[in-house]
Image 1: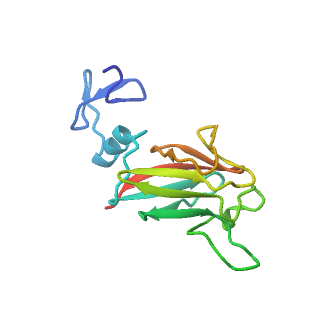
Image 2: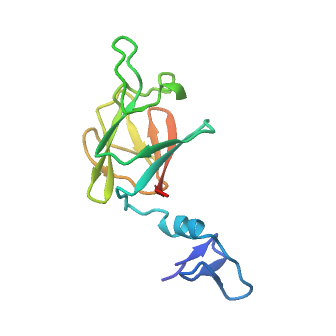
Image 3: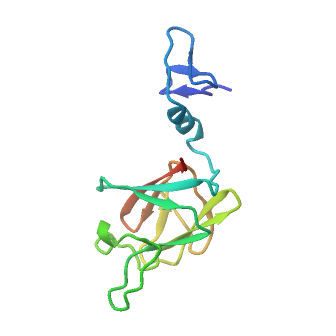
Length: 156
């Protein structure tokens, strides 16, 4: 298959992480696993979801759960979603109190917009409210105007 095992379009890597052809380049097991898993829909109980929020140097590390709500704290009731985005300027960026959910379905992670005021998009495609969308490793998630990238990591 064309491009299989390629990194940056310049080298082909075999299953041990060694470059084929001229010269030898070694990559770590973690680097090789990350490159070969990019774009995968596989998300298991042994994984952690890393949410890299645009403008923040600190990612959110989210352990596996069956279902997690994303949104912001409700100042009048004190209710908070499992993934509270308040500290990331969620109100200013148009994130609803209960904006979306992440739901595990077998070895897949699905995203549902909860009928939020400003919508949810994955890789530029707006989601229909209450309809599942399978999340892929590396997907760009937009809640209102808040942009984040979803990265799947194996627990160590």
